[in-house]
Amino acid sequence: MSKAFKKLFKHRKKKQQTEKINISKKKEEETSIFEPKEIKLLNPHSAEVRCVFISEDNCLYSGSFANDVIKHKLKNDSFKKIWQTKTSSYIFSLSIYLGRLYATGSSIFCFDPKNGDMKWSYSKGLNGYSFVNVWYKGSLFVGGADTFLRKFQLDNNEELIEIQKVKNNGRIWSIKFYDDKLYTSSSNGSIIEWDYETFQQRRLISGSPVGAWGLEISNSVIFSCGKDGEIQTIDLPTGNPIRKFNEKQSAIIDSCLYKNLLFTCGDSGVVFCFNILTEKLVARFKTEAKNWTITVSNDRLYAGTTNSKIYVFDIAELNPFNCLSQDLKQLFSRQELCDNSIQTLEGTVNFHDYFVRKRLEIENINKFQSVFLSKKQEEIETFFEWIYTGFTKNNELVSGILKEMSINFFNQKNNQKALQKDLKKMYEDDDSKEFTIFVDSKPIKIHKFILLSRSDLYRGMFLSVTEDNSNKVTDYSGKSFKAVGALVYFLYLGKLPKYLKKSTLEELQDAIDYYQLNENSNLPTEIEKLLK
Image 1 (tube, one colour):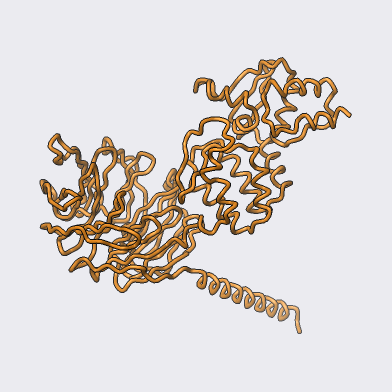
Image 2 (cartoon, rainbow, N blue to C red):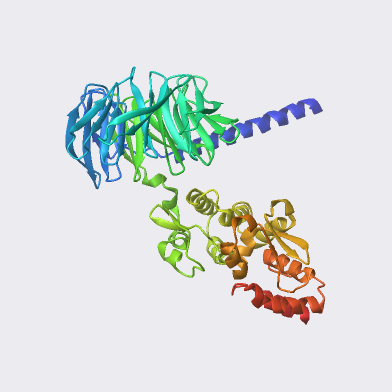
């Protein structure tokens, strides 16, 4: 057999093996996709259900092409019809503000949500149907078929006054607010960022090329859901496209975000659910007809269809927190939040009925490790996904710690040496250090979260200094530059540099009380080892 033939044979064999692996992976992924049946099927309307809205008091409001709005009271997956009221128009969207229910179609309607009585309707200047209405900071924003984005406010009689309007470059299908900015998606596929106060266009972002009906934003990523069935992810700060993904969907008509899950629906009669962190399909929910609208609340998915029905699905199994073991849940339970807190916490985030502290002391890493060492990789990853979705993006103390912890636990199977290696990298990376200590007029740079978590002296100092001075401080301990530098090295790595002079070690002994190092510090032990 010639060398060329052997090489070709080897290449084909390798290709076949790769194809088998890919087929096997695809089958495995397919079997892992969650496909539940509905737990409830409502048939309240006589025509297509166009919008479904869940209020904070656990009531379901739905609007349809039968020109009506219906209210149900929800309790333990049972649905009690409270009222049904007729209007003069198809109903495309619903919202509640200050104890009033607002519906949009060819007019804007205002109802008393207690009994369904219509208070007034507004149609002045509206041409065509209004597809979406959203309340934000005391103003009602409306968009639809006439391509105008409109802003309304209530007068003293609780009736609408149009404050502003601006021409969009296509029919407005979706209005979203993110980071105090207004975003619209339209029938021509573009996404526009607006100043919601002045209605000045800030920038134009390319979304789905065939029309973006669904628009969601999370973690500075835009999810543009198009009529071609594809989901385009876009980096929000730059406006640059990231990638596309789909699951053989037909036109996407509606979308919604729930925690780290993206739901889409459309012509296919299937609601698709993606994990936005992995962009993988995790569930499919089948209905008997085309879906016009979807919404999610309290681990329940509601899908309104063209056959006048509302399908209700239980999605609790998709809740990533539910798969965590009790000891991992306990780490951030309400009791954990209250115990051993050094200061009054700035706030908490309610996540799956558990509370996550927004300030996390680095000394707790050892306790976390003892729990994580017995856990599977998948469960640890889920735990960190849960933390990342719970914390605010600007939490400088937590983000640095979790980044290093996650690198360690995700990739190194909880290896303590890997964590020390990562912290050493942070110690050596002066560019990312945002705080400076001046000793004898010489600078020593350090990450603020290291000082916050290790030294009660600096913790108190950070809470009291003005914002202008918050990134620099002069050290008044009277210790030498070498001693303070050795202390900073220890705060990162938990050990002292080798070959320190006896005088420097003695300085460090005196520094323990001055810097108010926390009780878990092993600095005294390290000093004693080197003094022997």
